[in-house]
Image (tube, rainbow, N blue to C red; front, side, top):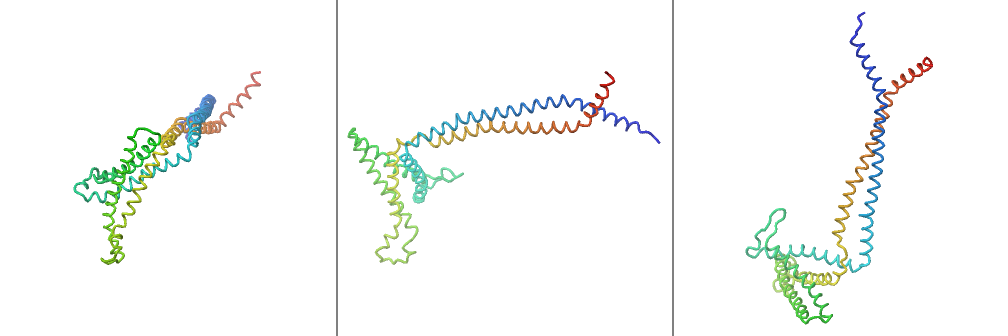
Length: 296
């Protein structure tokens, strides 16, 4: 029977390497324990810093913001609704009026096509709606100054803003009437040419134009009246809240969670190394116990 010395040497080398690793594992485990403890300790420290900074830079300012602005209610609510409604009306009404203006000469020329088509008609319509809201805003300011006994110029400004509004309302009503004709509502309702209500029905959108224009004036008036109750900007507060919350989350909280995972992985690795070296360490312990009596 041939003896495979190469195989024997390989097995011996593996056993020696295994026993060497078992002895080295004590130093390795001590090193890994240090990393594990540092990971858990730093994770606790980062979570503590996150809680501290979140309270200082997010929770406390948020509470202060809510307390300050709560004293301005309900006027602040009226102001916010007026501003939001004004913005929505500028978008909606200018889009509708642009359908009329784009039929006039070169007003349909596009300024931009992507991502949205904007023509000269869109810009003019938006300016018309904005100025209608502005007339209500200026009217209230002039009215306040007039009540305070300021310069008589404010009486002229008040009258001028009211006249400007009336002219703009007439202009917008004409636009709505022109759009109304495109619907052919009298034909849809089967009204003959001699019907008294035919013209009224054909221009039915004029009533909507009057209503929307009056609402624009009132919104400008309310925005001016409650502007001193606007308080802190919700947009600035919301942006600050999001930026600080995300910043603290990314800089402190997520790293603290990552360190917990690192510590847990190292702990599992230490357990695996101890299990792997269990037999080798048992052999070394037996050798030590066997040598101890002979030495004595």
